[in-house]
Length: 217
Image 1 (tube, rainbow, N blue to C red):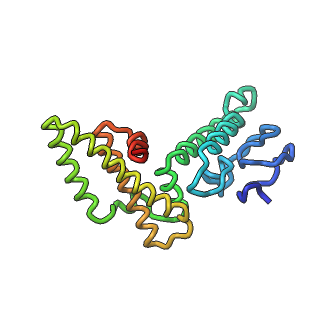
Image 2 (cartoon, one colour):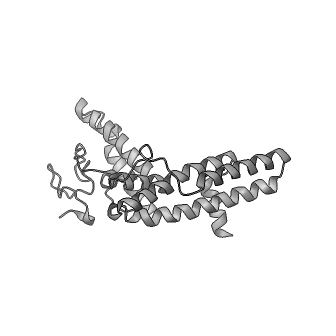
Image 3 (cartoon, one colour):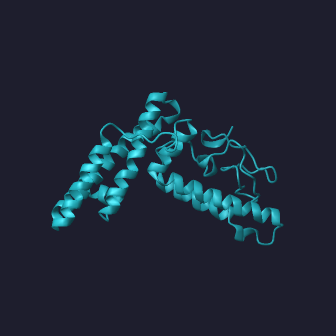
């Protein structure tokens, strides 16, 4: 039985140590190509769930990254060095996706068979009309030099983004069990996040910092 409920091979084929990730052995550092079933979560030895312990994610990434780093295999045959380079790149990609709450939800929806952003570009309700109105108000505040209005807009947009992220988190946690209508709702919410991020970028605001401020107020 694999540890932590993951569908991982039980032991290394070479030294028989227990495997925490399907791509490298902690004991003898043997490398393995990712099996067909491997996803970003299994590469990092994590269960497939939206709620992630960031400290655990970081520690798992650092430990596995050391194990597959190409510098460790400079004296090995070309095929081993090539595999290490591939695994390092795939591990970095997995970490980048899972460490971002929006990309993590998008990935869970993808592997659950939900619509991608390319397949479905819709956003919730009157969202686009609201965005157009916000842009007009932001442009007007810029034109008149109303810094207080710009600050209020940035805080309001960050708060709306944070509320949308909370809705995304609820749906993404059960992405594999969602019916088609709720998968479409999740896709719409995910699509809306890029508009919030673009608005905050126009206002030169870090969405995570702004969200933290609105949460603490």
